[in-house]
Image (cartoon, rainbow, N blue to C red; front, top):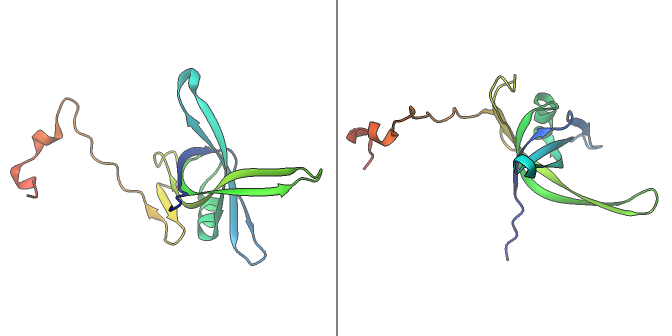
Length: 148
């Protein structure tokens, strides 16, 4: 059976990202995000730790701050350790492969962009045009617009 470990979430940063470097010089950034689900009396917030590496870590540390909304794509990882008192501890966290701004450019003064570990920063595509209220966009198509 093939295993699938893919996480895609949107949330707000609970603190500024903390960038450090490994002894070999790789950048690593740790951050926390709050992810809401439900609404009204059933609204719940999950607080999730996220780790980014290399160029993605540099991007996150440079452009994201506490309160910013972001989309994170990555995988779920598991960490185990022993406390000073000898108790076994563990936690789940996300290792992000891709991060993106969410919201308007006004919300993110650096503009809308995303970063994927192997690529470069790219502008988010413009939102699709919205049909005027009361109109059906199909009615506005001409026979020449149909590709078949």
